[in-house]
Length: 83
Image 1 (cartoon, one colour):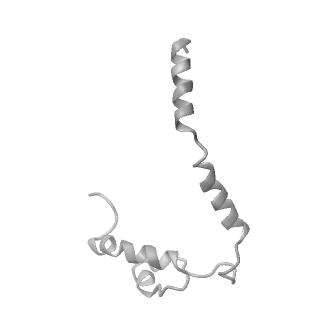
Image 2 (image 1 turned 180 degrees about the horizontal axis):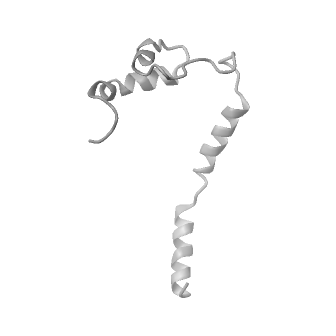
């Protein structure tokens, strides 16, 4: 397919996702497949919400504010006015 992943990498993608998403998960297999991966608790307190967590949540929220129907109506109006 032209991607740098082996069949094993693709087969283990779900397990790797869960290992990365759960800070309490055993990431031994993930570390073995990706030895350069940074697997650690970056701030020393996995229960603390950091400014980076807040920034990511804010950026994700921005993507939900788009009013698709409103944009389509504006495009139709622009076409009517010859823009």
